[in-house]
Image (cartoon, rainbow, N blue to C red):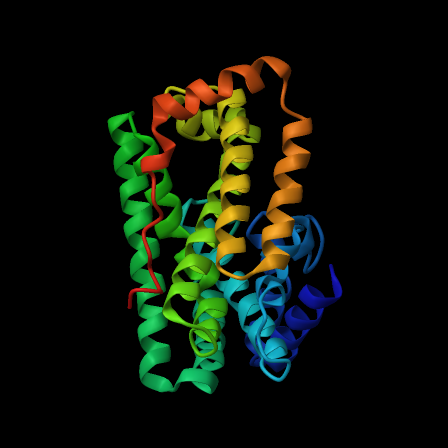
Length: 288
């Protein structure tokens, strides 16, 4: 594991009640995201996923606390996600409740009990709404780009909560809204690529993949990943988050180099057909 993930994971295990320690220690393997004991790094490799608050201009005194809170939220969110999709190799409900309590406690330290409880409730409700919408779309066997994006933003609203709650205390409303939008666009870019790579696996598990549900190809999804990484870079630059904007821009450039020439030519027509400019992230935190 990276030092950050390893440190927080070890802290969680060592401070847990004795009866929970083994389950928490083996949780990444139980969730099927690792073949090693405690191996979160096999699933989380990208710098913004691991330590999103590090990319923001937060006061030095609050940044370590925000990063720890983000990692705790990641443990909770990934466990919730894998459980909801039936990808866990065993029951994790007790570990999930413990992780939620730790995450909630980390919010209380910053915003107090009432707001912390509201944040956690919003995360749960958003996630549940995303799962419900996704299951409905797969049952209907059709979806639009807006519905695809909405599923993702609802299911991953928890991802930016630890950062945005801290940012809310140190920035204006416009910067907060743009930062949230940029993060959501970046998450959409990452998901497009994941769903392109996992096309066969998803088809085997569900009978249909996301690209097929939208009537697109793997190459289309790869091109859309490039587009939304570039779009995220622009939004984050406007939000005054240069480090994350630069990361998104470099990622877009890397993916573009891997994009086949034919897809580079066809891609702009795809953007017009899907009307991506009409696709606007729905704010979950900046309009609370």
